[in-house]
Length: 166
Image (tube, rainbow, N blue to C red):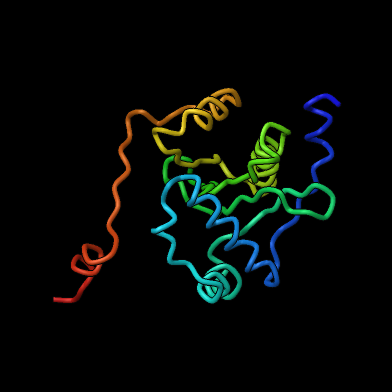
């Protein structure tokens, strides 16, 4: 079967509340791959609150038949220059035994379709500098690195210190 034909056979579905343990499984698998498992503090109750009660992000599964083999967690951001929302892909992960079969590309194609359907101006994500297989994959799709930008982050005590009332 040709690669493009395989991609067409991928089933996609949005996560439901009962998928919370599966979402956490994928998050932990991704963190292990990125050598950051020790940084995962997400719990099922936190995911339920933020994904389903507060609706701050969405999860899309790529499935082989009924079996979820990959996931993408994303949310809307906003571009002031474009004057419209975009989609920000926080995490994309395909189980190792299903890599190279079109599931990652299928997830990105489906996210691009969703972005266009929702009138979004772009689809963005970050990638670890050392993750050459992913960088090569993204570039092959036509994605361009934002080389003039540096990511900054405030978290933990530093976020608390800056945000506390005087």
